Length: 504
Image 1 (cartoon, helix red, strand yellow):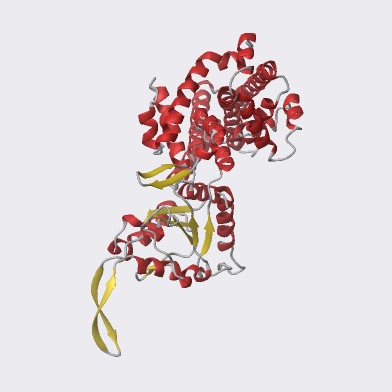
Image 2: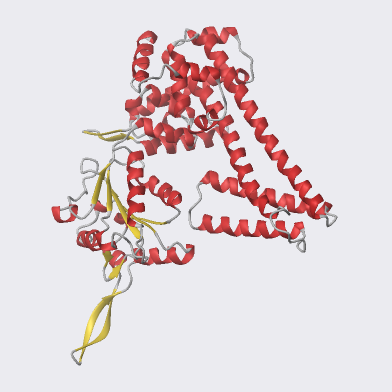
């Protein structure tokens, strides 16, 4: 299955394992909860989805790469203690708590999350001395003498033997005690993720044209060559930082992430063209409504790669607009929920001033966000939005403090006016994004009329996380018009094939 389906399966497993009966006990006892074992090539996102699952399920996460551990750190250190058996004293060897088990208890103590995921990576690559311990762990959920706390689900991951010569095969007894999930790379699933997490448009447009280079791992007489989804995402992050520093990555820089020389060279050349097209076509001018006939004619006669690159540039800039709308909408929604708590109509208490109410709400908000942040329950976007809301609450509090005349109704009126400005900002972003989308259609229609290239553009809009959120609210007639031609999933492949043959 692909990584998206694997993620859904793990979430379903967690929901089932954490279901309790009327007496508060788990419906499936801990000893009967099979550990999940993700088997797949390196870099497909096995580790990354664990963080997403923990946040979405609002549970804890403790992650370890087991190859970094010795038997002592996994099992614990031995010590001698005195025991009495049958009236006689004996010296007995016991073990300190495993570092891994202790980390789970530390997580519970620091976050207050009594349920979570213990994720062990590269579990089938352990050393010979640690192998029996791992088998014991999978079968009995213990490290040494110490058991994993109830409510903590064990998820493990490993690579197939063709990718790692250190892989050890599990015996049937062990395999019969785990939930085995085979994960395969899937570009379409990754592309949806890439749009949501703003992977560099050059990477997306390149892989749209050369999907076969998305995940390639080969071993030859000259060594190991590979390009993985993780490599593309990390390269994307580095390219964006380089651009902020006014630098351009060359072939050597690309090769540091894409360790497949032929692909690295191909992408480096593609990136050079990307920067050229970005300068030539002036995307911001197009989205502001300046449609030049010369550029339309140029694009209509351009080769396939250039068309894809320009559409990628358009989609990337549009996605930034759509994200701004989504962020402002979510920010405004969060702020509204907090301001409702100081509404004088909510309760009849007039003894507390508006400033005191705002201070209490902001304090509770700050403490709640701090706990979520420390527990790892916020992704980067959520963290930024929560920080923005905290700053807005502080700003409103300080504004009321300076202008307040101890009149609850007047203070509340001023707060409502301040909130209305945030709503107006959302409306402005929404309107600007709608105009930009219409101008993009104007440009593409002038370049391709109702050609097949337009269907590719629509397909990418349908893939984008923020574009789909925007199009649920914005009624774009041309989007729905062109979308009608997308009746079957394999339609896109047919169109790509035709355009490629025309460009040759």
